[in-house]
Image 1 (cartoon, rainbow, N blue to C red):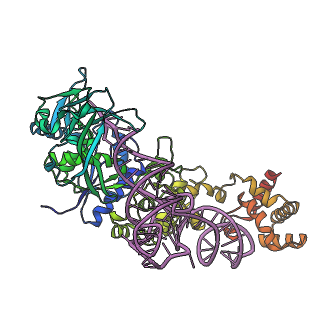
Image 2 (image 1 turned 180 degrees about the horizontal axis):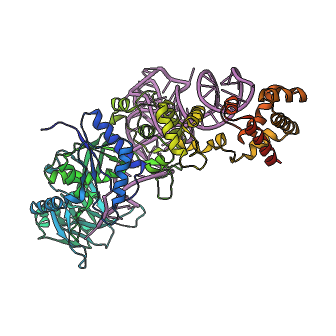
Image 3 (image 1 turned 90 degrees about the vertical axis):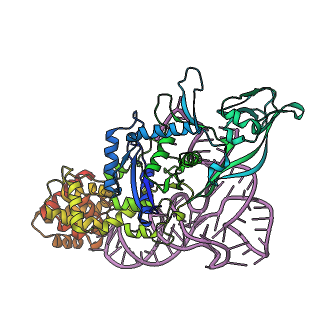
Length: 526
RNA sequence: GCCCCCAUCGUCUAGUGGCCUAGGACUUCGGGUUUUCAUCCCGGCAACAGGGGUUCGAGUCCCCUUGGGGGUGCCA
């Protein structure tokens, strides 16, 4: 018996990769590494309608970008069809599944029967006591090989239709008026299962049975359970002969010998169905860990309309893969101390599933950008310059810069950079065609003396003076403190209220450039 | 409707019955450094959803309410 931990990331390639999805991949990866186990990829591409080759390419690209490469060749679910169908046949042969059409027009599908035999659950089953279910008068109760359908009574006294698998009420007794026993499922169970007995009545008033629940110990959420009478037998092969997700998923997990299933919260309900399936197929039930969802800035689940939700967007917006990776680990997990910026090895060393949060986490793009900025500060200059050049090369004004210029401005701007998208604001450093900010203009040139001072400086520069002397002259003439000139100068030079240090800025250009910028800015300021 | 789950500052979180007058980070606000801007440093605002229990003692355990999410498909 192998004790190696084996986990998998099992996305369906039906579009762009979502951050919620990739976070699941990251947690799987981290857990595998922490356990010295294997991280596998399974592409659940059985929905041919929606699965596209482009989506598969996109998935691979994203995983490569984030350095989340699987340890073995990916398993494409569509290649496993025969094994899924064979599993369904085995279940039918063993009496754990049956063919059934719910309407005469429908082609029969294969249903998995939730096992009635408690011994089949490997200890996952628990009695929680006797239950008396009141039925709505005059409505039909039907018990057949597919389960029990009934109409209960809601809290407000209204009809409340329900359906239970046979296992949910396996020892049930149906009573009619005056406590007469109409039907005992317990006594007739094997006949009902065999399809020989069908009970249907509108006289039934209540059903009494022992409630049993199926449970498991979730590595994140703790003990989880669900009553069997709230579950129905499930379709595992469609009328058209194609395997359904539940079957395919469980079969492939057996094929890949998965020991731990780490996936989104939205799968907890499936777990109650998958456990009996594993057991019926003779597989070992894996351990489960369900991750909380990631929600948008409104605290709602991400929908198609939300931006900022695809991994590709982050890449396009100038995020570093290691920063996004790090940030995503912080969504629903923490190392237990005050560390937030952790590299891959630190994350692996600190990762534990029992430290995963139980509730949903909201994406905070500002914090993500802030963290990205910290990674940017740590980047070796060579890498940083290359990335900057790459972004610059896509702009009209930036593509002409030579290596030295790129190095100079990048060194200047690096401390205030959060993402590579910020580079797009650097235009004023090198290109006279930059845009000027209204508010900055007002702040730096709004007053008459500011404009006057700038005109004087421009004139001096045009007359061949150095900046130093032009500045000193102007200050003396207008009786101004040296520092008062900084803001107007900055605005004339950059059109912005903020930016790098003024002296560094001035070093980027000669006196005539400087003078013409003053003239142009003054003109624009009116 | 029914079933399941969740709940600490605006956000991500620390907290596993006494170390909590609840800590860190992002955001925000103030101050310092800076002739300007930013980085940086220092500081402030800001939370245990509500109500009942259990206990000598509850953010931590139990119950209820409220709010949120998931499921309830021959989707995955």
